[in-house]
Length: 309
Image (tube, rainbow, N blue to C red; front, side):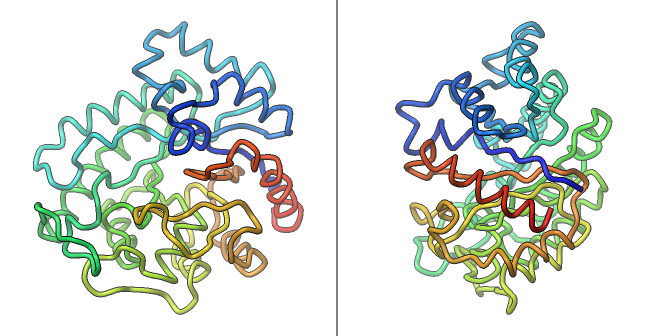
């Protein structure tokens, strides 16, 4: 299956770009000029999102920005970060925000929505080298809350034709390899899958970054994690890793060639793990020079697509 290449637009609107986001029409124009097949929308801030574009006409106008150029939108990174998925016993607010974003997906013709557990891994217990959190939730209760809520999300999104993908990463709770499998088993829905991001997979499986309690790694690192997730990957994010964290929170996302990942080792495992669609997405989140690095990253992934796609 030939691969379509997209890139996450959040790279141009948060972090180093928060004070001066690249206007969304400029993003679309540049990605089109560089030969991208589409984009993955960071639906927050000044870029298109359900709180900015509330009417059908406004949303149609956004959709036309990429469709008029023959491009697609590979997914929506929904703004759920104000919600307490774990520490709140009441999931009604989370579900309302999720549903709002699913409706936005449907209106824009987007068939994948990204989620995460929204809260720091420290809510599940002390992280070595970090101060303890004021609120700590029993692991089994936290797992029950997450899985129950996401099972509802997966079922409702399935009815809308939208796949739910969980981006597991060091910055949010349930960031051990065994956690990932427990959540998948607990949700137990065909419409709930993993977003496999190469830098996060490296920091989780090789380094056990920001894991509460006993550190858990895999001998085979990121490639082994891909193999363990065979049949459960619903979106692939590609970027390098330099084995560090950004702001001691999440994985650093350096451009290809500025990290240490061996993609010739990693890509066969990713391909063998499977994915229900043909998108590969570049993720330059928090990279200070993302706008300038985009062209080089596109060329690198084009080469990967020729070799492994």
